Length: 198
Image 1 (cartoon, rainbow, N blue to C red):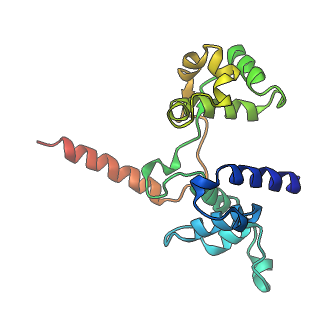
Image 2: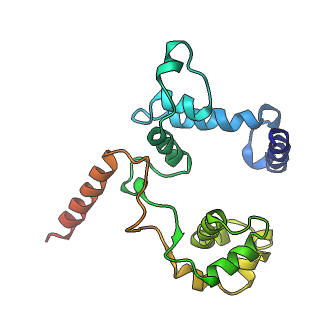
């Protein structure tokens, strides 16, 4: 599997070499781990270096490997940063897009869009993300991109599914969110109220 990923990765970066602006010879599958770790480790107020090393699968060495173990909350925090959420925003604690409810319509589109994934929560999450980001994808991908010839985009059901997408929930709770995010949300509310004053 690692070999297959490496080949696919090298094919993708070779195809987009002009956009990257760096010699593709210097890139490999290790670049993802190294780049992600460097990015996350570059924040002064970001996750601890132990959390970053554990996420990357690196040994810390000596006694530290015995006492510092994988911690889900720290790993989720790193995951949120790597997914592109702004850690200095009140929206850092937002949930991924998901369907308010799953009915036969959603299930059918999932089966058609991802026929090899079977029935599970994964195709449901992938479909919700595609629906939620469809406008962005339309603006940033060429019109001839193969994504736009898939079932979701040709079936005419995109707008129906959009109405069922939500990013807030009473049942789900975001994880890996530091306490400062709730403070940022409170500050935003205060700022908004101050802005409304005459």
